[in-house]
Length: 214
Ligand SMILES: C[S@@+](CC[C@H](N)C(=O)[O-])C[C@H]1O[C@@H](n2cnc3c(N)ncnc32)[C@H](O)[C@@H]1O
Image 1: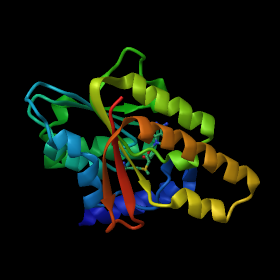
Image 2 (image 1 turned 90 degrees about the vertical axis):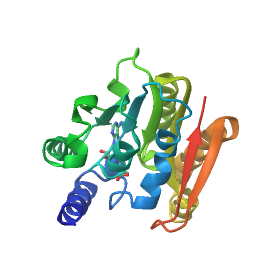
Image 3 (image 1 turned 180 degrees about the horizontal axis):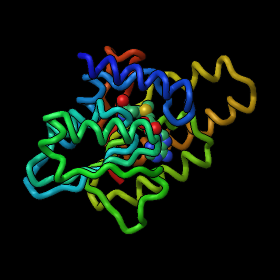
Image 4 (image 1 turned 45 degrees about the vertical axis):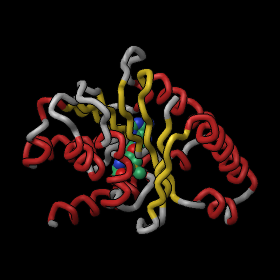
C-alpha cells in the first residue's frame, strides 16, 4: 500500500514535469493491467517467449506481466524517463515478486525509437501516450512496433474512450488536425489488424485495450 502511494506520487510529479511523455496522472489500475497482459497469460504452447513492455512507468502493468510469465519467458522494459527507470531498478532489487524474475528481465533506459533494428519480440505491451505525440511520431512508433513484432506476435495497447473527440471539442484548429491524424492512423491499424478488444468500464477514465497482430 505504501509503495502504491509512493508510485502515485512519483507518477503525479512526472506528469507535471514531463506531461507529454508521461501522459497519465496515475499508474494503470488492476483491470486495465490485467487486460493489457491478456496474451502473456493466454499462451497456446510453452515455448520461451521474448516479451517487451514499452513505457512501464512505475511498473503497475509490469507486475501483472511478471505474474503471467512462464518460467522460460524473458522480459525487456524500455523506458525513457530516468525517474521511472530508477524506480523499476529499485523494484527489481527489493520487491520479492520482481526479484523472482530479475535474471530474465532487463530495464532498457532509452526511447523505443533507439531499440536495435534486429531485435524482435513475441508479445508486446505498450503504455505509450500516443495522443500526446505528433502525427509523424505516432506513425513512426507504429512502424517500430510492427518492425519489433516477430511473425505471429501480438501488440496490446490502451486508449481512453472518446478522449480524442473530447480533447478536440476544446481545442483549436491545429490541435484538432493533429488529433484527427492520430485517429486515422490508429483507425487504419485497428481496421486491418485488430484481433481482440477489451472494454474496461471501471477504469477512470474508461478505456479500450486493443490487441493487434500484423
Ligand atoms: C501513460 S504512462 C504508462 C505507464 C505504465 N505502463 C502504466 O500503465 O502505469 C506512459 C509511459 O511511457 C513512457 N514513454 C513515453 N514515451 C516513450 C518512448 N518514446 N519510449 C519509451 N518510453 C516512453 C513514459 O515515460 C511513461 O512511463
